[in-house]
Image (cartoon, rainbow, N blue to C red):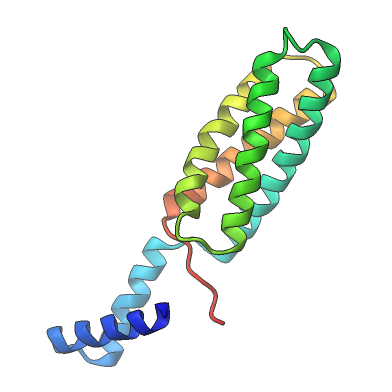
Length: 153
């Protein structure tokens, strides 16, 4: 259904502006390049989200075993972060039109989580903070790139 709408819009645009097919194709490619994120960036974002999810789960488990009251902010942020990263992976793998918006929120949450986990000693905390920082950077890149282009089927 989506491709039918795309074809109709392309036809209306060409007829309305009296542009040739090749001129339209050039304009369309230019717009796509400006508004979309490369497949490599999306794949890297998926990998970073999975790593962040993994380390947040480990960090949360370790924090619950150590001192849940003192570590409550760390536990809360890791829980939120891993759920949001999981959702980002689902939307990114499905080439959702909403993935870039969610990645912007994920970037903010990962930054907050990295800041909190970075306050504590321990290898798991350090690796969690590092994974969150990397995920935040890649998610921000996806968010700034705009909608994700669907792969041709």
